[in-house]
Each structure stands twice: as C-alpha cells, then as structure tokens.
Image (cartoon, rainbow, N blue to C red; front, side):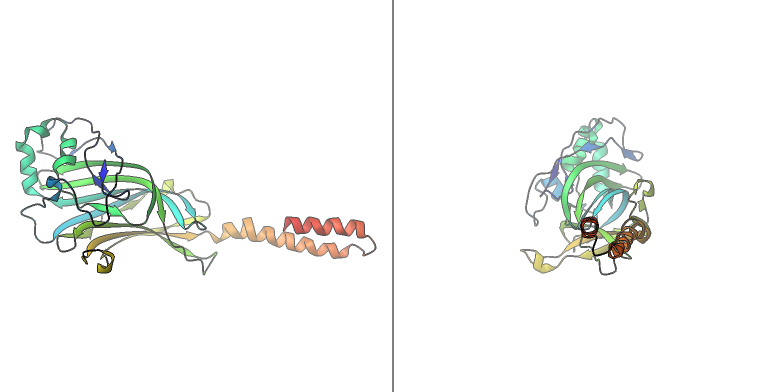
Length: 287
C-alpha cells in the first residue's frame, strides 16, 4: 500500500508476484494494486529502511523522473477538473543497496515485497489530486548500472484552473504536480527524455491534444511548510486546445438557426393572435 496521506505515492508492502531470478540483469515484476492510508503533508517515511538515503550518493541525490501519459478521458470545465491515467518512473543510483540485495536471502523469493519494505524512495505525493480510481506500483533493478527504478501507474481525477478568456479558441494546460517529503538539499529531481503520450486513448471530440509534454522541476514555498523547509516539486503539463469547429457546428450553428427562425414570428399578422402566440412561445422554449 502507499504510506502518507491519500495523495502519497510512497509504496509499502504490496501483493507482488514471486520472482526467483538474481540481480545480474535488469529485473522487473508484476504490478501490485495498492491502497493509500493517511499522514500529514510534512511527514517523512516512517520505516527506518525508507529513511536511509544511499550512502555513496552525492548531496543532493539525483532522481530522474519520466512520465508516460496513458490516457485523458474527461475534461470538466465547470468543475475545474479532469480525469487522466499515467505512469511515473523514478530512477536513482544506489550501488550499496544493489549489492545488499545479492547477499540478502530474503530477496531470493518475493523480492518485490522486500523492495517495498526495505528500499529507499523519493516519497512523492500528489498536490492537485482530487480522487484516485486505481494505483499500481512495482520495481525494476539494473545491477550493472546500479540503479533502482520505482514505477507507479495512477488513474484518477485532478484539479486544474481553466482559463476561458479566449473561449472557444482557448488552450489549456493539464497539470500533474508532485512534491517530495525530502528537503531539496537532500533530493534533486531532474527530467528525462523518456516521456510519451498515448494519443490513441485521447478520444475527446471537443479537444485536440498538443504535441508537447513539458516537465518542470521547481521548489515549494517555505511558507507552506511548518518547518520552513523547501521541497522538490515535479510539474507535468499536457497541452490541449479546444476544437473550435466542434462548438461552431454543434452549438453556434444551432443557436443561429433558432435565432433566425424566431424572426419569422413577426410575419404572422397581428390579427392572427392564436397562431402567432404559440409560435412565439415555441421559439422561446427552444432558445
């Protein structure tokens, strides 16, 4: 499951499939469905193993972040939210733990479960998350490069403030925002070039998906923390443009026809009150 508050992306012990291979090559295993529990925003990992940063890592430890947008299923302008599914990869260098995994007999069996118990992680949580439909987490280890990757697949609803000044020619930035509970002087996030968008699962007729996927790494405001600390943030932006032709054909054209037809009520002679009044009320109800 995920420790931290309901927005945390920090895995603990999950229901993992067994994998009996050793760590001489890249390893990955089946995904695990996970359920969150709760903690405060400024919380750090509660287990001792998760609090241990790689000993040989520089200060701050570099964590490479990559994302794959799997699908965007709904954009609700009125409620200021949207639904999305994505995979977030976090990779860091940890030669000490990679060596430890080959000497610990517990990693011979259900090694994914042991990773959730003992491996260090960046302890990310989501800032603009409204609801979670599903979460999965699994690990990959590259012993040759001495790197550990935590992979998370999230499907849920996320907040976004939409700008409608240029409707129906507006362009919206759909944002996914994460923050680590490790101070920025201990963990530094950098973007990788391995980012992608699955366009085949973007089926919203009134929107057009942009060509760019932007990842920004910033810092939180010290005033947002009770300790006055700053933390690393990862912001992911997906650009969508409104399909103005969709609105022109399905809304504006219909309104134009209704408005035009309403003028024909005046053609009916005033003496034909019983004919004119029903037509007038019909046009009012339609409009």
